[in-house]
Image (cartoon, rainbow, N blue to C red; front, side, top):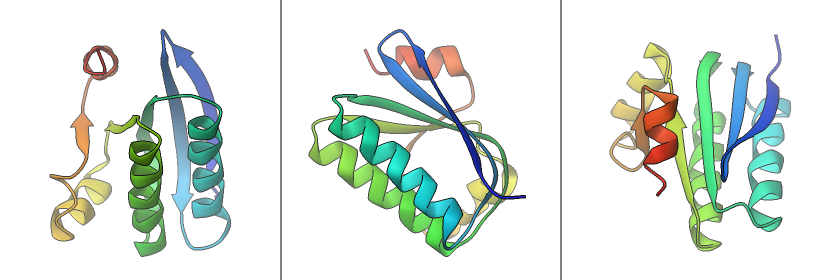
Amino acid sequence: MSVKLNTRQVGDVAVIDISGRITLGEGSGIIRDAVRGLATSGSRKILLNMGDVSYIDSSGIGELVSGFTAVANAGGKLKLLHLTKRVKELLQITGLYTVFDVHEDEADAVLSFK
């Protein structure tokens, strides 16, 4: 299954619900385009809901970092929500878990942008 995205607004926070596999090629490119599109259109608070991500490879991790940097350079914040065990382990192994602001509750994550 390839990656699927659904973007919605919760107050002034853009939430991207991600499901499927984030892999080299289509999966990582779709996320890159969505995050950069939001950042260039003025969204400064972006939350990636990764609760339904079944798999992520190194290029997917790279796109998370790239998106984080692009949003930060635009004066915004990108945060992660509902990491699966696999994604959390990969971020911990790579040392990136401490770079991202990770949340388990959507309401708390939205409030953390204030």
